[in-house]
Image (cartoon, rainbow, N blue to C red):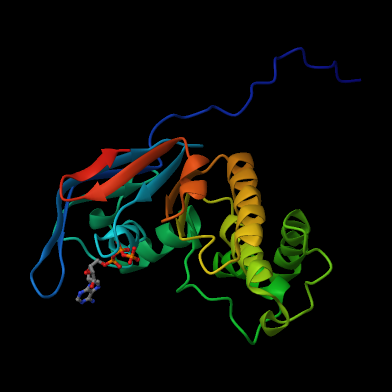
Length: 237
Ligand SMILES: Nc1ncnc2c1ncn2[C@@H]1O[C@H](COP(=O)(O)OP(=O)(O)OP(=O)(O)O)[C@@H](O)[C@H]1O
């Protein structure tokens, strides 16, 4: 009989290295106006950072740059220690797919897929077989209170329900970094409050670093840090 090991069981190491590191970022809009220059930001694992600022100041542009969906004029962006600029197109796509969860209006739920298939998509794109991905998607949908809707299609859902699906999809592949652009935009105040509470609870449970771009004081109030984007760059609010 094998003796029972007395070796201690160590918890997974907790790394405080930033999941997002932005250094000296500069971006001008195509017309030439400088949106920001020398902008820096570090987000630790498990940290929730809200970015606020006037309309047109460049919040969504910053999020798109961090997501690798737009290219900066200067500076450096690293996700989970990987520098975007050092990677080719395929590796950059892979980094985005594996390490980032998106709650973006532009990342619409696909209308021709069932809700479970939509939620499973990040796993399938990361080469997980559908047979394994779908049960995980169902479990994630249950967490956001939509466990019985997996076979439905997006057109059958309300705005708040769709936003919950977007949250489930953003979290299913346990990303290191979650990027959310107005996660409660377009929702009535009561639904916005519920979706926000769910989003924060799930984000906290996942341990991912999170950046939320928002105009909502309610959303900012649940963040660990609130930064204002303006002419002086990112400043504490
Ligand atoms: N492709 C583009 N061509 C020209 N200008 C652009 C382009 N994309 C964004 N802009 C401009 O860049 C500026 C910043 O836009 P962005 O969407 O990042 O602002 P924002 O702070 O997120 O605004 P809002 O709070 O209204 O969503 C705006 O003035 C916008 O018109």
